[in-house]
Length: 605
Image 1: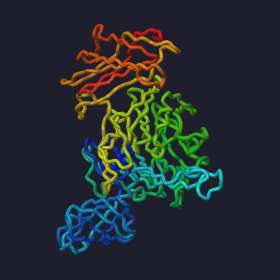
Image 2 (image 1 turned 120 degrees about the vertical axis):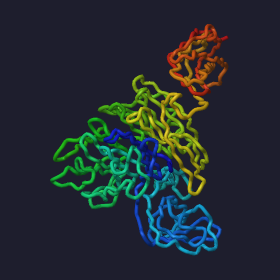
Image 3 (image 1 turned 180 degrees about the vertical axis):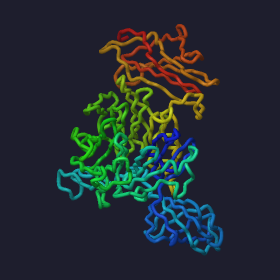
Image 4 (image 1 turned 30 degrees about the horizontal axis):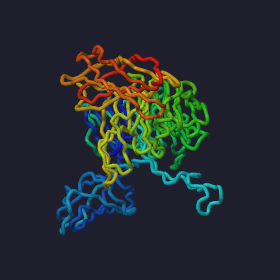
């Protein structure tokens, strides 16, 4: 899929087909079975006024079209073009192209598959052009940090005053995806809402090939539409009462965005947004904050975070339809996607900690919070997103470390046992000038429709190219080695922090370690081998003073572990110990239980 995915959603149609949708910063895709089809809406279509100019030996065409409305890297599809007279024949022009440069309001450039020759003097007249919705930014671009971002006593600024600068940002693309009954609704931040009719556009669980009438259509194009929002920050479908709710949208009769306005459609009618005595459409202005950041539905209410407060929105019926209550002020949420509903409890990441909500906001103590928040790329915090793995009672937050522009780490909470761990899957640092093939996760969906959690990841990225190479794929988590299509050697490890058994001058002497290890499943050619490493330190934060290593033998019978007599005996001493289990092998996975240490206090020497 073209672009970096910023949202993934799964649902089931009336025929029990399992469907999916992915929104990237460039496009939207509908997924049925293993087929992904482009359903990106069309912004405008023209049947005249588009001409081309070629330069001998160059593969770049200059396209003239008055008031085209395109931005750099937009996609446009041409049809009915004729040859320019030489190498640039009609087949070279007709089809989808990406705009590489916008010259001005009336012209732009595209790159074609062959260079022109001296005979290419025509203009490709009689062209039809379909422009897809404008693409979005892949990164959050911050040009200034606001008052206090600059140094004190700089230049002509008075003594003891900080330089000021207006906050100028180019926001990254954010997508909203939800289902309305069996159909799909989508939007990009700053645009309208679009509707994708499943019964019209999906046959035999396969979306139709992209064409103007098989793509998602703007709400205003449907019969019976009235006053649907032309600009929204986000939206969701309230399944319990049948309303579509838009957040940070334009008011009635306006095209200007109100960042604190909530509007909703008529009940069981996603197209009628004009309030009247015959419907339940309406709206409400929130009062605290400067913009709505996130809205998420629970079983009994919709939670709405502004940048400084948390509201509850509840369906109460006529005449008000919805009631709004302030839950708490001085509440912050780190990013629009950093909140998640798991078993009707809300977990979210704030600017400096983790929180839960089940009637009231409660901080979640975390021993890894300092590690996470002190090494995070705050400029790209909008990319932080939450995901859940309900089979293991886990909530993940993926976030970019200080050296990365994309999420390259995760922090995980087991919300039943109240335990935490950190890691990185197979994610790596993605620099601003990245030219890599990576697996950094960019969005996540739990096993709601499908049997396993599903994530999108970066399959290829090259920000130095024009246009940039941005490609995304889908991966399913928790597959067994036999079911997984991704085979080969996988490196993985589980490592503890420093374990203190004694205090002061006392050392700990460990004579034996009993691992609790299980191999739930493996393929026939697997060699289940896990290595145990124990490291000792004499001082907190100091260097490792001693290490012992042991290959843990495992019976090739799924679900069992047999200690190898006294081979688990160890001899190591220190004031603190850390334990690491690791493997680098093919086609099996393993699970760690409650391992045991045989240790005792020891003297200083």
